[in-house]
Length: 126
Image 1: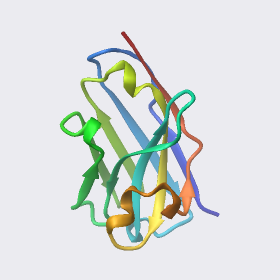
Image 2: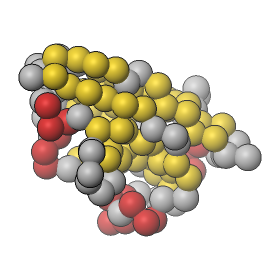
Image 3: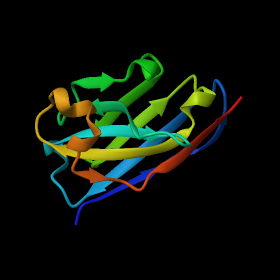
């Protein structure tokens, strides 16, 4: 049984930082593209960042480039998202997700991911 469990969310002031983590079990972690998505109030779930199985290739949505960093530890089956210079518009529930396969142009596509975590709330106050 595959499980993805996020942690690290919370309340932070604008300009602050948070580090999200996702612990995976029940899958061959290095065989999966891992991604972070978010869903704000009344909004659709959107792509944030993705990383290939080797942790070499990364991909970000434009609004977080230069502020967020995605990384993974295949020895510990963990995925991280370091978020700096947070803005109120970053407020959302953040989800980690796993997509089987090599890094490709589908890394940003929500419908291509096979497994999802339950999400962790990030709230940025102004």
